Amino acid sequence: MKASSFFRNVGLFAAASTVSRVIAALSVLILTRLYDPSDFGMLSMVSSIAMVAGPLVTLRYAAAIPLPRTQLSARGLIALSFLLAAGCSLLFGIALFILFRTAVFSVAELSSPVVVLLVPLSVFLYAVQDIYGSVLVRERAFSVSAVASILHSLIGETFKIAFGLFGANGIGLVAGNQVGYVLATTFVVRQRWTLVVGLFDGLTIRNLRRVIRCYLQFPLYRVPSHALMSVSAQFPIFFTALRYDLALTGQLGLAISLIALPVQLLGRTISSVHYGEIATFGRKRPEEVHRLTIRLIGIMALIGIFPAAGLLAFGPAIFTIAFGRKWQLAGEFCSVLAPAVFFQVLQITSSNIFDLYSAQRTAFLLNIQRSILVIGTILLADFGGLAAVMVIQAYSVAVSLHYLISLMVAYRYSRGRRDKGP
Image (cartoon, rainbow, N blue to C red; front, side):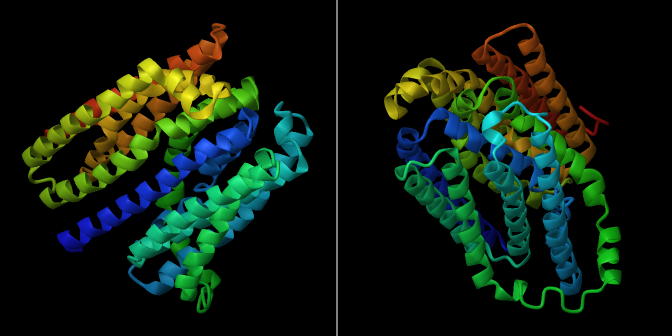
């Protein structure tokens, strides 16, 4: 891909991501007045489960779709991913039903038959989005992907508001999100109808076995890595839902979703540009990789320090003014999470360094470290009898430490040093 084409695609994704996030942010001003914190708690819990399980039900074979040289192998991966997504989501739904029926979970609001049905459906829809995302990357249909992203946000938020106006509870928020997934996927299918028609033509059991063996490293290595990363990222939501209630979970979920906007809008776009630049340097020019990385970290620090400081000092007041007094606790969560988001923005380039130098083992060890730090800190803080806000503050300190360690390890790699681990 030419450099001009690369930056055009980066700009396209940046624009689509910005529009999607702005739509979501603006809709929150309305949704927080239509729904209660417990309703947002249900949305946060279901979404967190989908974000963890969605990519896993395909055993990460969906991530391999852009790689095959032949269309037959690519269609084999697509078909395999769909079969795994459908089968594993169904098994997940059955297991969830059994767990809720045996009262393993104490979250009463999640035990209704409707919610138990919506959770595996959300997992399946998230997996389908993951599959088609990989397909569009393979076909370089970046404009289709960008439009689908905006449609998902626009339609999903519109239906959430509509359901709220008719007095729906948290199920309305979850259902609105799912409608957005369905209609965005329908748009993708209409644009790439050949992905559906004839998908299984020419495919045999032998072909499926071949792609399973050829890309076996994805379920063997990427599944545990993704599981560690996503479970540790969503653990605060799971913990608050099981330890406290959905109302408090909704407060935390709103805080996390809004405070993550700078990372989603700014960090990922700049990270993409950074990766494109260092990829042109390659491993043989580590001094240029190092120089660009340090410069970018400095820029990110200057950009991120002021909003982080503002949220740290005035988070509760900002949330009370913007969303009403019942969301003041979300502002307190946002305030204690501000340092973690600042350090996350700084280390956004570290994964690019690890990819450039094929340091997947180091990245995996860092994911293990993050899981131990996050889960251990939260459980220890709770065992010590700390209040919910203090528990999340301890989590913020722990995850900030992880981001700092990741940044230092990436810095070491950018200087051309090859160590065995962090």
